[in-house]
Image (cartoon, rainbow, N blue to C red; front, side):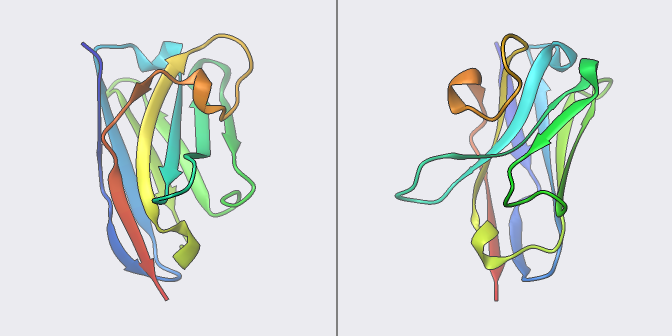
Length: 125
């Protein structure tokens, strides 16, 4: 049974930092595309960053490139998202996701078939 459990969310002022972590079980994350998405009520889920460790590949949404860093620890089966220089528009529920390493490596929602329950990030101005 696959489980993805997010942690590390919270409230922070603009300009601050948070580190999210996703603990994965029931799958081998080194064989998967792993990603972080976010969603604001009433809006579509948005891809933030993804990683494929076997290829040493990462990809970021334009809105977070240069501020967020995704990393993966295969031994611990965790995927982290370091978020710096946070802005109020980063406020959202953040979800960890996993998908089979097939096809294009990107942040298309349809590519990921395992999802966590989410962790809330709130950035105040």
